[in-house]
Image (cartoon, rainbow, N blue to C red):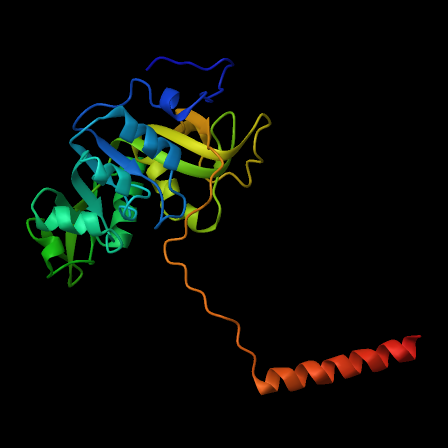
Length: 264
Protein backbone atom coordinates (compact mmCIF):
# COMPACT_ATOMS: atom_id res chain seq x y z
CA UNK A 1 0.00 0.00 0.00
CA UNK A 2 1.40 3.39 -0.98
CA UNK A 3 1.84 5.78 1.92
CA UNK A 4 0.51 9.27 1.26
CA UNK A 5 1.22 10.96 4.58
CA UNK A 6 3.46 13.97 5.01
CA UNK A 7 5.08 13.19 8.36
CA UNK A 8 6.33 9.97 9.89
CA UNK A 9 3.43 8.19 11.56
CA UNK A 10 0.86 10.72 10.31
CA UNK A 11 -2.10 8.78 8.91
CA UNK A 12 -4.27 11.71 7.82
CA UNK A 13 -5.78 11.91 4.34
CA UNK A 14 -7.39 14.97 2.70
CA UNK A 15 -10.80 13.34 2.03
CA UNK A 16 -12.78 10.13 2.35
CA UNK A 17 -12.23 9.45 -1.34
CA UNK A 18 -8.47 9.82 -0.93
CA UNK A 19 -8.53 7.63 2.17
CA UNK A 20 -10.06 4.77 0.16
CA UNK A 21 -7.94 5.27 -2.94
CA UNK A 22 -6.61 1.94 -4.20
CA UNK A 23 -8.38 -0.10 -1.53
CA UNK A 24 -11.75 -0.90 -3.13
CA UNK A 25 -12.53 -3.74 -5.53
CA UNK A 26 -15.54 -5.82 -6.55
CA UNK A 27 -16.37 -8.82 -4.37
CA UNK A 28 -14.46 -7.66 -1.30
CA UNK A 29 -15.54 -8.03 2.34
CA UNK A 30 -16.07 -4.76 4.19
CA UNK A 31 -16.68 -4.54 7.95
CA UNK A 32 -18.48 -1.34 8.96
CA UNK A 33 -18.79 0.13 12.44
CA UNK A 34 -21.93 1.51 14.01
CA UNK A 35 -24.91 0.55 16.14
CA UNK A 36 -28.19 1.53 14.55
CA UNK A 37 -27.37 4.97 13.15
CA UNK A 38 -24.91 5.75 15.95
CA UNK A 39 -21.25 5.78 15.03
CA UNK A 40 -21.71 5.14 11.31
CA UNK A 41 -18.70 6.16 9.18
CA UNK A 42 -21.03 8.03 6.82
CA UNK A 43 -18.38 9.86 4.79
CA UNK A 44 -16.59 6.59 4.05
CA UNK A 45 -19.85 4.78 3.24
CA UNK A 46 -20.75 7.52 0.77
CA UNK A 47 -17.29 7.25 -0.82
CA UNK A 48 -17.81 3.49 -1.25
CA UNK A 49 -21.17 4.20 -2.90
CA UNK A 50 -19.66 6.75 -5.25
CA UNK A 51 -16.83 4.38 -6.23
CA UNK A 52 -19.33 2.01 -7.84
CA UNK A 53 -17.77 -1.22 -6.48
CA UNK A 54 -20.20 -4.13 -6.51
CA UNK A 55 -20.87 -7.63 -5.12
CA UNK A 56 -19.75 -6.56 -1.66
CA UNK A 57 -19.99 -8.67 1.46
CA UNK A 58 -20.89 -6.33 4.33
CA UNK A 59 -20.23 -7.24 7.97
CA UNK A 60 -22.04 -4.93 10.38
CA UNK A 61 -24.36 -5.04 13.34
CA UNK A 62 -27.16 -3.77 11.09
CA UNK A 63 -27.70 -2.32 7.62
CA UNK A 64 -28.83 1.17 8.56
CA UNK A 65 -32.29 2.32 7.49
CA UNK A 66 -33.75 3.15 4.12
CA UNK A 67 -31.67 5.94 2.61
CA UNK A 68 -29.27 6.26 5.55
CA UNK A 69 -26.13 4.52 6.72
CA UNK A 70 -25.43 1.29 4.87
CA UNK A 71 -28.91 1.52 3.38
CA UNK A 72 -27.46 3.68 0.59
CA UNK A 73 -25.32 0.77 -0.63
CA UNK A 74 -28.44 -1.43 -0.82
CA UNK A 75 -30.21 1.26 -2.82
CA UNK A 76 -27.31 1.29 -5.27
CA UNK A 77 -27.34 -2.54 -5.67
CA UNK A 78 -23.75 -2.83 -4.49
CA UNK A 79 -24.24 -5.51 -1.81
CA UNK A 80 -24.37 -9.24 -2.51
CA UNK A 81 -24.05 -10.71 0.99
CA UNK A 82 -24.63 -9.46 4.53
CA UNK A 83 -23.52 -10.76 7.95
CA UNK A 84 -25.54 -8.92 10.60
CA UNK A 85 -27.43 -9.37 13.85
CA UNK A 86 -30.31 -6.94 13.35
CA UNK A 87 -31.93 -5.67 10.16
CA UNK A 88 -35.48 -4.83 11.20
CA UNK A 89 -35.38 -1.10 10.35
CA UNK A 90 -34.60 -1.44 6.64
CA UNK A 91 -37.54 -2.24 4.35
CA UNK A 92 -35.39 -2.46 1.22
CA UNK A 93 -33.12 -4.98 2.92
CA UNK A 94 -36.13 -7.15 3.77
CA UNK A 95 -37.45 -6.92 0.21
CA UNK A 96 -34.12 -7.82 -1.39
CA UNK A 97 -33.74 -10.75 1.01
CA UNK A 98 -37.23 -12.08 0.31
CA UNK A 99 -36.70 -11.65 -3.44
CA UNK A 100 -33.52 -13.73 -3.26
CA UNK A 101 -31.35 -10.83 -4.43
CA UNK A 102 -29.42 -10.67 -1.16
CA UNK A 103 -27.64 -13.45 0.71
CA UNK A 104 -27.91 -13.04 4.47
CA UNK A 105 -26.20 -14.74 7.40
CA UNK A 106 -27.89 -13.80 10.65
CA UNK A 107 -25.43 -13.84 13.55
CA UNK A 108 -26.33 -13.46 17.24
CA UNK A 109 -25.11 -10.06 18.36
CA UNK A 110 -22.63 -11.26 20.97
CA UNK A 111 -21.33 -13.91 18.59
CA UNK A 112 -20.83 -11.29 15.88
CA UNK A 113 -18.83 -9.10 18.25
CA UNK A 114 -16.70 -12.06 19.35
CA UNK A 115 -16.10 -13.26 15.76
CA UNK A 116 -14.77 -9.79 14.93
CA UNK A 117 -12.71 -9.60 18.11
CA UNK A 118 -11.26 -13.04 17.39
CA UNK A 119 -10.37 -11.97 13.87
CA UNK A 120 -8.47 -8.99 15.21
CA UNK A 121 -6.71 -11.11 17.84
CA UNK A 122 -5.56 -13.81 15.42
CA UNK A 123 -7.88 -16.48 16.89
CA UNK A 124 -9.24 -18.58 13.99
CA UNK A 125 -12.34 -19.93 15.75
CA UNK A 126 -13.99 -20.37 19.15
CA UNK A 127 -16.74 -22.37 20.85
CA UNK A 128 -19.94 -20.81 22.17
CA UNK A 129 -23.21 -22.27 23.48
CA UNK A 130 -25.19 -19.51 21.73
CA UNK A 131 -27.21 -20.91 18.85
CA UNK A 132 -26.86 -24.62 19.64
CA UNK A 133 -30.01 -26.44 18.54
CA UNK A 134 -31.13 -23.57 16.29
CA UNK A 135 -30.63 -22.74 12.59
CA UNK A 136 -27.57 -20.69 13.66
CA UNK A 137 -25.67 -23.94 14.25
CA UNK A 138 -26.67 -25.67 11.02
CA UNK A 139 -23.65 -26.89 9.07
CA UNK A 140 -21.22 -26.01 11.88
CA UNK A 141 -19.29 -28.40 14.15
CA UNK A 142 -20.98 -28.95 17.52
CA UNK A 143 -19.04 -30.53 20.40
CA UNK A 144 -19.76 -31.36 24.00
CA UNK A 145 -17.42 -29.94 26.63
CA UNK A 146 -17.94 -30.68 30.33
CA UNK A 147 -21.46 -31.86 29.63
CA UNK A 148 -22.55 -28.82 27.64
CA UNK A 149 -22.88 -28.52 23.86
CA UNK A 150 -21.05 -25.77 21.98
CA UNK A 151 -21.00 -24.66 18.36
CA UNK A 152 -17.75 -23.73 16.65
CA UNK A 153 -17.79 -20.20 15.20
CA UNK A 154 -15.13 -18.92 12.81
CA UNK A 155 -13.44 -15.57 13.22
CA UNK A 156 -14.16 -12.73 10.79
CA UNK A 157 -11.31 -10.94 9.04
CA UNK A 158 -12.40 -8.28 6.55
CA UNK A 159 -10.50 -6.99 3.54
CA UNK A 160 -11.38 -3.49 4.72
CA UNK A 161 -12.76 -2.01 7.94
CA UNK A 162 -14.54 1.35 8.04
CA UNK A 163 -14.69 3.01 11.45
CA UNK A 164 -16.11 6.18 13.01
CA UNK A 165 -14.38 7.68 16.05
CA UNK A 166 -15.18 10.73 18.16
CA UNK A 167 -11.57 11.77 18.45
CA UNK A 168 -8.25 10.70 16.97
CA UNK A 169 -4.69 11.93 16.95
CA UNK A 170 -2.59 12.06 13.80
CA UNK A 171 -1.02 8.71 14.73
CA UNK A 172 -4.40 6.97 14.52
CA UNK A 173 -5.11 6.44 18.23
CA UNK A 174 -8.88 6.48 18.70
CA UNK A 175 -11.50 7.40 21.29
CA UNK A 176 -15.24 6.72 20.83
CA UNK A 177 -18.36 8.30 22.30
CA UNK A 178 -21.19 6.45 24.05
CA UNK A 179 -23.10 4.03 21.80
CA UNK A 180 -20.67 4.56 18.91
CA UNK A 181 -18.19 2.50 20.92
CA UNK A 182 -20.37 -0.60 20.60
CA UNK A 183 -18.97 -2.22 17.44
CA UNK A 184 -16.38 0.25 16.11
CA UNK A 185 -13.47 -0.96 18.31
CA UNK A 186 -13.72 -4.64 17.34
CA UNK A 187 -14.24 -3.75 13.68
CA UNK A 188 -11.16 -1.52 13.81
CA UNK A 189 -9.03 -4.54 14.70
CA UNK A 190 -10.65 -7.04 12.32
CA UNK A 191 -9.66 -5.46 9.00
CA UNK A 192 -6.59 -6.22 6.94
CA UNK A 193 -6.75 -2.48 6.24
CA UNK A 194 -8.63 -0.09 8.53
CA UNK A 195 -9.75 3.39 7.48
CA UNK A 196 -11.12 5.74 10.14
CA UNK A 197 -13.14 8.93 10.00
CA UNK A 198 -13.01 11.02 13.18
CA UNK A 199 -14.96 14.07 14.28
CA UNK A 200 -11.81 15.63 15.69
CA UNK A 201 -8.13 14.98 14.86
CA UNK A 202 -5.38 16.40 17.05
CA UNK A 203 -1.68 16.93 16.34
CA UNK A 204 -0.77 16.02 19.90
CA UNK A 205 -0.99 12.36 20.94
CA UNK A 206 -4.03 11.30 22.95
CA UNK A 207 -3.28 10.32 26.54
CA UNK A 208 -2.51 6.57 26.40
CA UNK A 209 -4.71 5.98 29.44
CA UNK A 210 -7.83 7.01 27.48
CA UNK A 211 -7.01 5.45 24.08
CA UNK A 212 -9.50 2.74 23.13
CA UNK A 213 -8.05 1.65 19.79
CA UNK A 214 -4.25 1.95 19.45
CA UNK A 215 -2.97 3.62 16.29
CA UNK A 216 -1.26 0.43 15.14
CA UNK A 217 -4.66 -0.69 13.83
CA UNK A 218 -5.34 2.51 11.87
CA UNK A 219 -3.95 2.64 8.34
CA UNK A 220 -5.63 5.81 7.06
CA UNK A 221 -7.48 8.62 8.80
CA UNK A 222 -9.78 11.40 7.62
CA UNK A 223 -11.64 14.23 9.33
CA UNK A 224 -15.41 13.63 9.22
CA UNK A 225 -17.64 16.27 7.70
CA UNK A 226 -19.93 18.10 10.08
CA UNK A 227 -23.47 16.80 9.68
CA UNK A 228 -26.71 16.44 11.61
CA UNK A 229 -26.64 13.15 13.49
CA UNK A 230 -29.59 10.98 12.57
CA UNK A 231 -31.86 9.43 15.19
CA UNK A 232 -33.17 6.01 14.23
CA UNK A 233 -36.29 6.09 16.39
CA UNK A 234 -37.29 9.55 17.56
CA UNK A 235 -39.89 9.17 20.30
CA UNK A 236 -41.27 12.29 21.93
CA UNK A 237 -44.49 13.34 23.64
CA UNK A 238 -45.85 16.64 24.98
CA UNK A 239 -44.88 17.40 28.55
CA UNK A 240 -47.84 16.75 30.85
CA UNK A 241 -48.25 18.45 34.20
CA UNK A 242 -50.35 16.97 36.97
CA UNK A 243 -52.19 18.70 39.82
CA UNK A 244 -49.56 17.23 42.13
CA UNK A 245 -46.77 18.90 40.10
CA UNK A 246 -48.63 22.24 40.29
CA UNK A 247 -49.09 21.98 44.07
CA UNK A 248 -45.42 21.09 44.54
CA UNK A 249 -44.35 24.02 42.35
CA UNK A 250 -46.60 26.41 44.33
CA UNK A 251 -45.23 25.16 47.66
CA UNK A 252 -41.67 25.48 46.39
CA UNK A 253 -42.29 29.02 45.09
CA UNK A 254 -43.76 30.05 48.48
CA UNK A 255 -40.79 28.56 50.31
CA UNK A 256 -38.33 30.32 47.97
CA UNK A 257 -40.12 33.64 48.47
CA UNK A 258 -40.07 33.24 52.28
CA UNK A 259 -36.36 32.34 52.20
CA UNK A 260 -35.61 35.30 49.95
CA UNK A 261 -37.56 37.64 52.24
CA UNK A 262 -35.70 36.39 55.28
CA UNK A 263 -32.35 36.76 53.55
CA UNK A 264 -33.19 40.32 52.53
